[in-house]
Amino acid sequence: MEHRIELKTERLILRPVEEKDAKAIFNYRSDSIANQYQGWIPESLDDVHKFINKVSPKIDIVDTWFQFVIIKNNSNEIIGDVGIHFLDTDKKQVEIGCTLDKNQHGKGYATEALKETMNYLFNKLNKRRVIGSIDPQNLKSIGLVERLGFRKEAHFKESILINGKWVDDLVYAILKDEWIEKRQ
Ligand SMILES: CC(C)(COP(=O)(O)OP(=O)(O)OC[C@H]1O[C@@H](n2cnc3c(N)ncnc32)[C@H](O)[C@@H]1OP(=O)(O)O)[C@@H](O)C(=O)NCCC(=O)NCCS
Image 1 (spheres, rainbow, N blue to C red):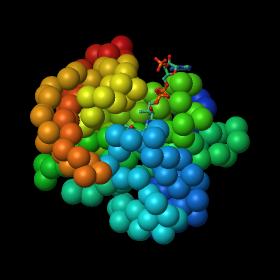
Image 2: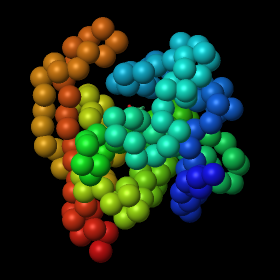
Image 3: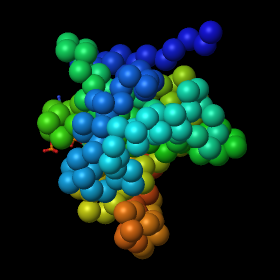
Image 4: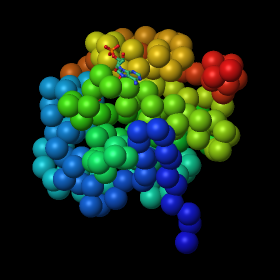
């Protein structure tokens, strides 16, 4: 059996999403105000089960999303998730996304979880470019990627249909060399 990936930081554990996480995920993902810039907002527990069944059980498979849940190591509470989209056939580029429970914003958990995820992507999976796709109005998310050292590469006008509305899309990116340089 394949070894299950687990990433550990000072305060957090990241592990692949499981069916039993559905209720916890529904609790924060269904908040349509906190998650107004997200393309997916579940309306029922069943929506979450479908989502869990759709993500790839294996990491690093082209054209799939892989999903970690973020767990506080001192309470075992699920406080959010990190999604990784494996983009190209050369297997060198990925897109990431992160969602935290509203009650857990402003404590540095997303930064901590993504730092470890990026280290894993660049050092273990040998990726060379990581991108984030962000609504220009999503200032918290822009703050997050800028804190991590991403550069703004593009601003596409009304290029994505989210919840029935055509919205702009910012693309932020960071290369492996830039990431390594930043961490030294
Ligand atoms: C995007 C999102 C994950 C960012 O969450 P966040 O709480 O702002 O980010 P962090 O967890 O890294 O916390 C950073 C904040 O905590 C503060 N902080 C407190 N303790 C900290 C610590 N130990 N380390 C780092 N920052 C800390 C920082 O100063 C920063 O505050 P600021 O926003 O006032 O500048 C969150 O807003 C979210 O879930 N939004 C809804 C989903 C969404 O839109 N996701 C984006 C799609 S990609």
